[in-house]
Amino acid sequence: MKTILRKVAPDVRYDGLRQMLLDKKRDVQKQIDGLIIQRRQDQEQWREEPAMDDQDMASRDSSADQLLSLLDVWHRMRISLDEALTRLRDGTYGFCKDCGEPISKARLNALPFAKTCIDCQNVIEGLENVARG
Image 1 (cartoon, rainbow, N blue to C red):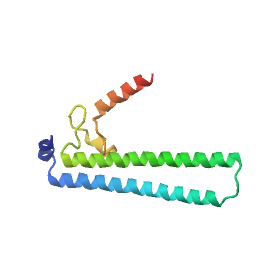
Image 2: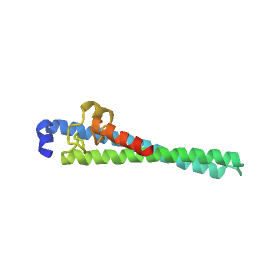
Image 3: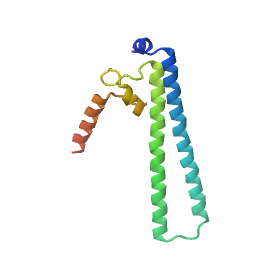
Image 4: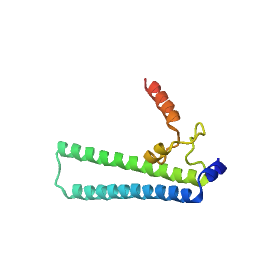
């Protein structure tokens, strides 16, 4: 597939795709860094507060859980962008990992780290829905 990408996508396109992925990764990292700073500030504030009742502690724990969930989402997105950069370097970026067909430009614009074409993704989601029952 590497030769296919090189014939279809000249180095200028490769450089543009690489830069776009790196820019998105930088934006994701900024989000992660901001959430980490927020978490540290929250922890400092909680240490300075007088003893809390059960309701205050539950609210604090809920807030911390939400922040950690957001961190997890952004971290997974950063990993996906790293994988997309690897696929770009290897010449497989833009091709479905399941069927090998090109992933539509619209899909890659919306989800630049997409690994599958929309048809294969729909099959995957359908199977997941069946498995959930």
